Amino acid sequence: MTLAIHGGEPVRNSLLPYGRQWLDEDEIAAVVDTLKSPYITQGPKITEFESRVAEYVGAKHGIAFANGTAALHGACYAAGLGEGDEVITTPVTFAASANCALYMGASPVFVDIDNDTYNIDPQFVEKAITPKTKAIIPVDFTGQPVDAAPILEIAETHNLIVIEDAAHAIGASYKGRNVGSLSDMTMFSFHPVKHITTGEGGMIVTDSDEFAEKLRLFRAHGITKEHLSRDEGPWFYEMNDLGYNYRITDIQAALGLSQLAKLDQFVERRRQWVYFYNKAFSEMPEVTIPHQLPDTESSWHLYVLRLNLEYLSGGRREIFEALRAENIGVQVHYIPVHLHPYYHRLGYRKGLCPVAEDWYEEVISLPLFPKMTEADVDSVIAGVRKVLKHYRK
Image 1 (cartoon, rainbow, N blue to C red):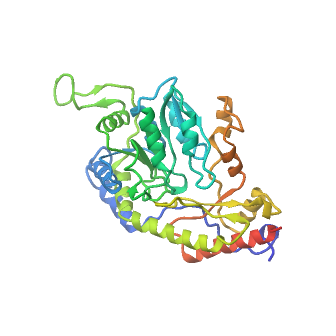
Image 2: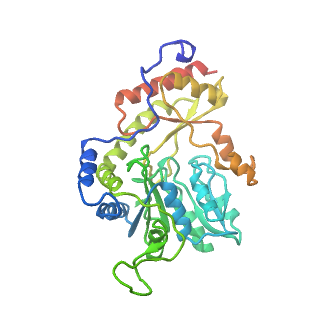
Image 3: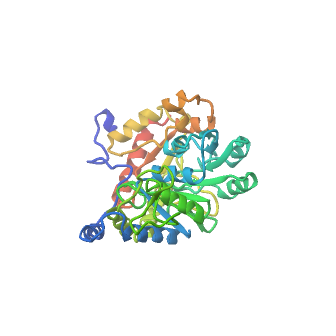
């Protein structure tokens, strides 16, 4: 069968993206109701959304932000990061996981990944700790929970704060506990390709009253009406620190509340499509399917196939472009952060994380989102089989 890139018929008539939101009349009605209410921002829907997310994951506090990056920035502020501090994190993530440390004047320290899970390897975390280390930012890459137990033990031993980047992992669990109930602070993202969306949005969940208070201060210009040092009248407020305007709106929170009610359904659909993918690809020597740690449940934000290039006559780029020509909207997640030009200018170099760098050359993300149909999944499987058959040695 001739590949579409060589003039053949593609397996699909239109492009299937790697991710997409699923909104229906429930979300439209929720947003319209809020638009008709007295509050479209700084109102009760935000508090309700925060409470419901915190309750869902089993945390005491939820603090919503304009986006996940802002939420990570807030977490670094609440953790007290500053000039000269070091933060250990993974290179296999979106840049925000490391940028948030830079925003506070701290330095990211990239350590390598586990070759099976693609998450940060705890043994490398331990070796990277110095007297300057202040925090660890592990990432639940693809929705696969990081191996939290050894990381939390390391953090306790060295008096470090753990800020878990769970942008991919709401709805996931680790050894019977929900992601969001494990670390000092956990960030969720509500971008449209994530499990639930508020358009743009993010949240930190935490059990710490101290962190929660700092996070709320930080997202609102550093201004508060709480615990005032003097009372000049009911209008009075104080700016106690240099914060940012990182607030979310009631419109977004209303959308998020409607989405949250469907989260379990969305995660179950993702797991169903992953089952079909695994069944189709597990016996193909040309690829390695994702690995899941025992006693964990991924929420499957991404499905990453690893190409076993020794069985293939083409490289990742050729296979990527061939799949795109078949209208399979594959993507690559992610370019290791330390390889970006900005980080190169900061002194980070290729060779720092060899496992992650080798991994990067061999991975492709397949479309995965709950609104996919079984026919969509079948077309992805057909496209991958068609392309790999052509490039098989």
